[in-house]
Image (cartoon, rainbow, N blue to C red; front, side, top):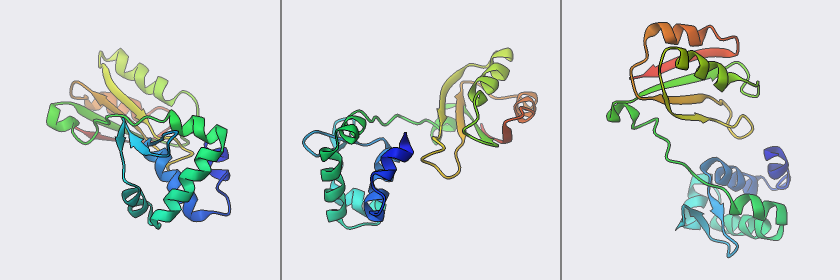
Length: 168
């Protein structure tokens, strides 16, 4: 589905950069053409700067989104989340980053969650990068207690897992 969204901007590489940024950040485009996150408006100049394009490119991208009913529905319903990975260690939480062999493979999260559940470790947050939006997708899991080395080893043995990083 994401590829279909991005393909609507084929031949428009600057607008495509803007769309990819909006998708990656979970920004909404309201029916009135405002770019927002949780109801807070993001200035188009800031979007342009981050995407490395002129502000008028952002304006044209928003107009294109508004003119396409499918794009309107998608961007009107995007949501960003509070991702705890960077603050987890400050809050006494642990972070496990799973690097999959192929992020499009089914069951990666289930396999990792099964290993953790068997060890009595609860998952506070699990965020999986979308392999169609991110070049190097990974699964980030936040837990409320330190992860024993044996658990990391067991996760590393899962066939679909290429590597494991831990931050405690």
